[in-house]
Amino acid sequence: MPFSLHGIGVSRGYAIGRTYLLQRNQLEITEYTIPDAIVEDEVQRFLTGLEVARQQLQDIRARVPATTPNDVTAFIDTHLLMLQDATFSEAPIGFIRTRKCNAEWALQLQRDALVQVFEQMDDPYLRTRKDDVDHVVRRVQHILMAEDPSYLSDPDYADLAPSRLEGRIIVADDLTPADTILMQHRGVLAFVTEYGGPLSHTAILARSLGIPAVVGARNARAYLGHDEPVIVDGRQGVVLVGLDERILRYYRHKQKEERQQQRELSKLKGKPAVTRDGIAIGLYANIELPEDAAAVRDVVADGIGLYRTEFLFMNRNDVPDEEEHLASYLHVIKVLEGSPITIRTADLGADKQVDGGRGGPVSTNPALGLRAIRMCLKDLGMFRPQLRAILRASAYGPVRMMVPMLSTIQEVFQVLRLVAETRQELRDRGLAFNEALPIGGMIEIPAAAVCAAQFARYLDFLSIGTNDLIQYTLAIDRVDDEINYLYDPLHPAVLSLIHNTIQAGHKAGIPVSLCGEMAGDPRYTRLLLGLGLTEFSMHPTALLEIKRVIQDSDVGVLNGVVRRLLRTTDADKYAETLKAIAQN
Ligand code: PEP
Ligand code: MG
Image (cartoon, rainbow, N blue to C red; front, side, top):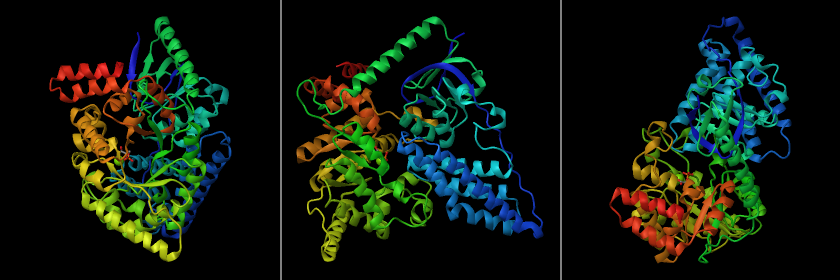
């Protein structure tokens, strides 16, 4: 009998194939006491475990073909850096010596401490990075317990010759970046995991590799048989089982359509994003690492609308200095060859790990606490080097600076004062910069959206961060699975705040863009056009599809329908009008 499993579709596309169920050996980590005489041997055993893990990862890294996207290898590099980091080795060695406990347990204690810090972070991306800690810890623990950490060379799967994975749909609890990379080379068709969300490793890697994926499909391995024919719909987040000829025909057709669509979309590279009624729309890309800039150039975006700089602060105990900031910005400027780049100042959470002990104690509501510009203004030792580097980078290309999480205009004044001071410092040092560096702000707190006119008066541009705006407007944690169903970009309050911000920008004569996930979701493109949006910034892989929708839209018509939508108080009419917008 046909049935379906539901998860989150995180990488589009359809796959039809047979499952390959992966059961990872569960490690049982227990504490036991080490006699005094061999405590140093235990420390040595631990260090050897770290070294073997490092060699394994380097081996995998060396096998990554040159064509693999950079963000894939970046994950392996992150794990290698973690293995070399003192946070990873010093504390467990201390535990072995003071508690006289075994190496596996010492590592587990440090893992728990690190994961707790990550869980307290307000930035959802960084919070998801606790998976990195788990993956590295698990690898070392497997080695210490003489178990193999990899699915693919797991004793249960020792016969996993590449040909056995070819054309298979992998079903697992979760996948490490190393697993994902190895599987890609074995011709895997799709991934289904029981855990993870849109920001998990599997999601990010699957998107980069262009492999359909559904994550968060709870108990998938209990419901799906090994070698069972299934369909993975990475768009809807559905796994279909018990296939009959009718379903198969339908999905084969969808697959064909999808391939055709991809071919058509690639023809749009370099073509202008102009609506049917002649309105030119700017399409920009969001990046997280300097290496992502290549993908921006590949889809011929108008520039970078959001360069998240938090990566510079990760996996270290100190803060990046001016030169480090500058080097990463210059790399992006060089790759973009004259297209504008919007560098966002650090959007770090109330956390010690990322920022080297800054930020004070972890608060109970980190998303409402010392985050982003609040933290930067409190910690000028961290903020000033970034300001100097952004200003210096502006001498080399069309750079803009963007400030996240503004809630009061006083924060804008403080930033402007600091920028003025920084300019003077650079002049004194005889260093070049753009005197007219545009300074913009992210509107992602309802208070700022309501008072957008005030912000528009003092800033050069605004960018709407809907990921946070939705979270703060609807009072729902954007990464909490329990209340995910309330995360609604179409809530009238959200649309009203977006509309108010766009209007405020237009009245002040400054550009307004939108750089949250909504910008890259074709279901919302017409609505946003109707709300008056003329600049979108999104993941580079979404850009061409959004362009296609734009070219097929009439802003004049959409403006009228959206005006009606914003006026309506009738819930049914609201839903009907939304439907009409999507079809216009
Ligand atoms: C947003 O909040 O919409 C945004 C783009 O910023 P981030 O996702 O980095 O918080
Ligand atoms: Mg945000």
